[in-house]
Image (cartoon, rainbow, N blue to C red; front, side, top):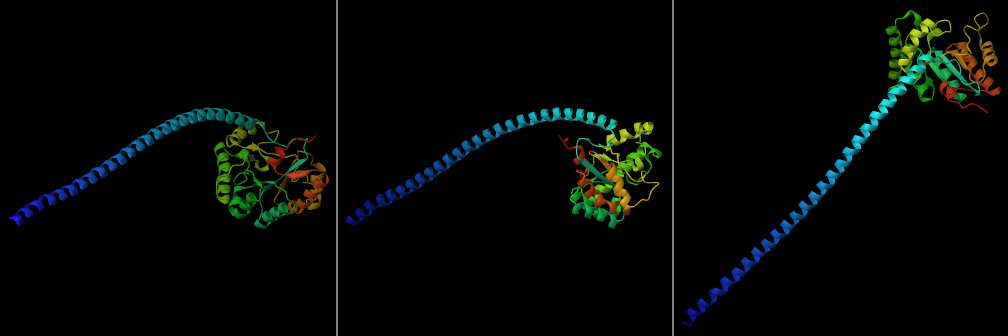
Length: 304
């Protein structure tokens, strides 16, 4: 009897222990779920806060976008006005020389020669530390692209001299545009990127001499619409020395006798002109004049 009663008394203890384990397990689960739910709640709150902050930033971006669009529209209108004013200016201006109150003298060289002659010019300019404005034809640029890429890399300016060097007065307006476009395409291919020059030199000066007003009225607006100024000169050699010996000594003498502050000197890629180039540079400097590019001349401050 005692054993039977003793056996019955031990059963509730086992059940009680199991219940405690189950209770603790459930409590742990509930606690874990509570912690998880709290974490989720905090995450949702953080996400909502982030979304609200993002919305505020998007509103600011939208306002800034609207402000920039208004500013862009305003600048575009102003730019259009400036473009029209500049086009009118280019349509009325032919540059024959710079400010006479400066000691700058622009060295400009036309057409382009053989690869050897072209590189010899660049060698001289580098040796004497002069930046010049060079007016090769598009055909010459196509023939010697490495030379003209070198010219740009060494700081020289290239000016549009047409693609094939024609007499412009014999061309239609569309043919003139094609000559200008052909030159630019040849240079862009040579230098490997977009290229624009503000300077245009008409081959032979044709169409832009003082006695060719009717041709100028037809041609200059075409040059202006391409964003360029026609560049003439006040010291040249081909016509000035046409009845004399054309050699380096006489070329040098003529340039040094006629160049003064603000002058634009016209040379060509010929053996005689290039042989004279070092003497011209040193001779100008001895007279207190500084050979330079067109840009340097046109932007030079007057001397006091």
